[in-house]
Image (cartoon, rainbow, N blue to C red; front, side):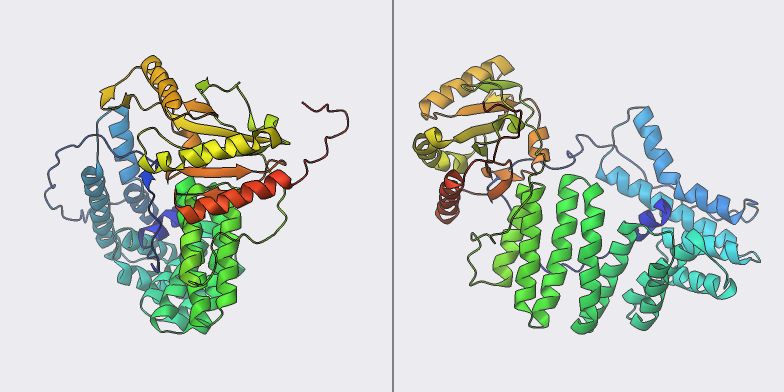
Length: 463
């Protein structure tokens, strides 16, 4: 049901109750900004072709694949495009869908044709007409099953919820949940609209089960998404659920779900999601100590290995080979002011705990510039060595040739620090240079240093 997933996302409206935390120094995003623009002209208005003899399915297919074909052609010809061109092509697609819908609506339609008419109206963003068409389709074809029936139910549920017709939306959502096929992302959108609809009515009791289902679905849907899109989906779901709990004076439940979000951030691991969870935790309960972690057992998972182009004052190492030691990954850059604030602390921790098993790795990238000058990789490497000596940083640097490490660990701002215990489990993430946060990091380092090393598996010698 890939098709309906795309259609539903066209009309997605998330109830925004909070904002993502901003970093101190920006790091990476999932997708780079377009580098160039293309001048475009608005096409002349076209009239529907009343002589078009294509079937309802063919008309929809033509409109549905319009943008995809356009952008594939641009890519093939290596033509630059930007946000304005993207908006133009999408508008052309909507206009085309509207013209095809006009052609189709003028015919005597069978039930399946009415279904495609509803899809065309939805693609054209004529949502009132889409709602009526899908109602008609399910009314005229009581035996409709499979993808068409599910798509119709989903579209009706969304549009009914938007209009405040929540009983109708509940019926169609229940039918959708009881039938197949289903797309987890679509279910996320459906539950989101139900929560939004009940919030508008201040009916938080009925919003709660949908908010709970939204969080459940988000955990399934987000895994397949890119790092920062995953984090946004999970954070939005927890924000809605925790806000619903607060409206029902269930503060403990609200805190618990945010703590679950923070635990997920540690497991992934994701500095970006951890920061979001910390921000939301303080919003939910201003009296809470956000740096006090619940004492829950966490199983070891394979962490993303660092992709390193050059090592400075550190033998090449893999995180999997550092099991048995406490590892602190400090994501930083020489141009980052807040990063420099943390240097004395990192120096102190290195000197105090190196002999007890603490390994600090300063993780940075080649940027091609330093101190206002363009540098070759060799020149930048020399600069980093000199920088290291100037600031008397005694621990090793891992220098990457790309932002892949930042993406793997969802580092949206720097400094961001990941503290890994002797079993290879991320136990703490620090996303700033503030005194309270670093005091908490210091306490956690002491705690992990005092924890015993895991037993060495039989047949494997200690290194």
